[in-house]
Image (tube, rainbow, N blue to C red):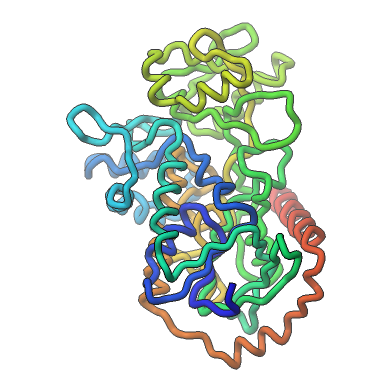
Length: 433
């Protein structure tokens, strides 16, 4: 790594990658990630990505998003996301993303919980993998972009509410260093790693949020944490929980209690379904409920959900002939670093996009398959905003900020990351109370 870049992006998920693709090719860009690029939750997204199905669908899509978010959504953000969704899908197709299609060549769409109609584009049950991989190919081919894994962002370099770069820790060499930038973008992902049971990769512990709390950058709604109703129940104690896509229920799967009796409407918003499952588990004295996929035609299961079939088979379950045990787990973070429709935070030269930010689009509860769309769109807008308003940082101001950073303070990254984790958990608990 060099000591100075035009833009530093922290995170290799769809938000970080799409932001990079909308920055000028004559600007030097550094993208870092805490582990390896593939350990981003963007690669795990199964269900799909929402797309407005014509003007007549606008009000329905808007109402579904607001209802799922308990009407705490930012209306401008919701409007922006919905109206721009077709352009996002078209952009992905131009990038090489292969969505499922009907026999006439039109895009196939499915339905998930909280949606009043089918409007979700998908690629089998690995839409996130398809999108993220294609974006990574495009980004990696750009000579102005440097992607560096095994690099942990530990702090900002800032002064007078202006960001001049980051303090990064080389996980391989075991050393901290200062890296400067004209603009910094946090695309750090969620906070699932701080919870016992989560669908997230364990290394996603909300570092960007914690650093912003430490440096006085505004954060919002840290207690807005979504629980996914259906993850595969397993006796294992470590590692992330395997998610059973909401599309499974959208295609006809039902939830059953210990007596194999259906007990809820599976297509309600996630928080409602989750509450119903917890209630039933308590009543039945069980650690899980059953999910029955047998109402879905076998060919549809094979073609739409091949990875779910395989994962269940590895755990000893045959989804074609028996029910599978499922349990809720932490899944998505609706709170985060406060950002506007261009990804700008309350600190100059610092942007936040994707799950690490809170622009209000999801409200108190995310509508299924709005996450990839939200991340891609507002990351694109952030990249364009930086491009259109690019001003080189003042060298003297950057030097002043750097002089206030003592690298010996960052010699124990594990200790720092634990402090960040504890700070977030404390903030969540305080907000809930």
